[in-house]
Each structure stands twice: as structure tokens, then as C-alpha cells.
Image 1 (spheres, each protein chain N blue to C red):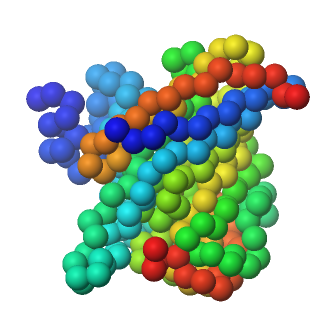
Image 2: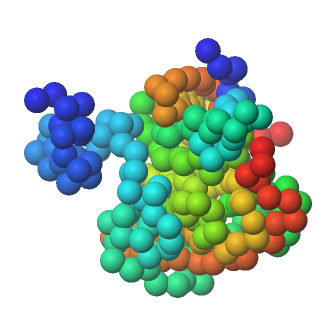
Length: 106
Length: 155
């Protein structure tokens, strides 16, 4: 199991600012190891963020997204204390779901 | 035929569209399973737009890059954010023209989510970066050149 995501969801005004940092190799499949063998591609393909069961962002990613991917987006209608849930699925079937409660902007 | 077989059997989007139309699956469910292989294998802007279901994209000044540098010191981690002020924007994709495959990522923007997303991408070399936006069924794009002083493909 991979390391947890770091998720921050902050309400400012009427919009929730979500920032996510995921732990993943994001191997492109173009690199060769020391013995000249191609390192197989291993990367996150789908990311879905939900709030109260409603999808607030969904993404399809290729191997050109950087290692340990960062993602930020904003949606409206969130309340402090409610949870934002983020799930990713990689091309080997690996999966991880984490959540964070919305906080008020400082 | 269950959903998984249906997705495997068809050429992806058409079967999915039929199933969504028939109310068999909700669009949100379908998306979780979907990965547009053709779009990720396209080599340039036009082919990518076609793979995403468009015919051609129009350049637009209402798409802006946010947080994207003019010069990236490390091609492995290049911050790129895209904001669209085009009404009814429901998809944003980021393409790096000179990467082996152009499209790095695409985001579906549901109602209630602002048309602004940021992430970090890899760039093999100095290249034009395109932001492609789908709004009300039409495709638009904006381009910015990002110079890379150290490529991102060596790991």
C-alpha cells in the first residue's frame, strides 16, 4: 500500500480550495535501468474527488504527470467540517482513497 | 454482458455513450473506469482534439496559464495551471507538444467546480505547452512555450 495522500481543503468565501499531494512513482515506461531493460510504466490513470457523494473533479492522467503528483482545484458549495474524498487508481490496479475535512481559511 | 465486458468489447467511448444514454450507468460511474487511450497516444494537438471527440480547436484568449514558468530548471517537475473563462467549460487538458505523447492529463469539470486546475508535468525538452478546453461541445486552446534547461526523462 502506498503512502497516504496529503489533502488540504480550505474554504474561503464560498469556494473550497483543494490541494492534493499524492505519493506515486509515475514511471513513464520510457526509462531504462542499469542493465538496459525498459522500466515498465507505472502511473496513476484516474483521479476522482467527491464532496458529499458528488463528484467535484475527475481526471485522466498519463505518465507525463510528475512523480508524487500535485493537484489543485476549486469548487463552490462546501461547508467547514464536511469531507472531501480523493481516490486514485493506477495502471496496475493499485488504488488509494484518502479524505480531509474542510477547514476555514486562516 | 456486464459493464466491464461492455467497456472492453466496445471501442470505449461509443459504447459508454450508448450505455449512459440508455441509463444503464451513470456518467460519473463510467468515468471512473474510463481512460482515453487514443487521446494519450496522440502525438500532436489536432490528433489529441480528435481523440477527445472534437474536430478542431480554436485558439482562445480566454484560456490563461497560471503558475506556469517561462523557464523550467527541472523538466521533471514543471508546474502548469490552466484557467478557462469560457462559459460551460467542462474539460481541461494539458498537452506538451514535444513529449513522446502529447497529452499529459485531462480534467473533467462538473457544475459547481471552477474551470481552473493546477498540476505538475514532465517535459523532455523545451516545448510548446497547449491547454485544451472543451466548452459546450466546442474545443479551444491556448499555447505557451516553456523552456527547459534540464530534461525530465532521465529520472
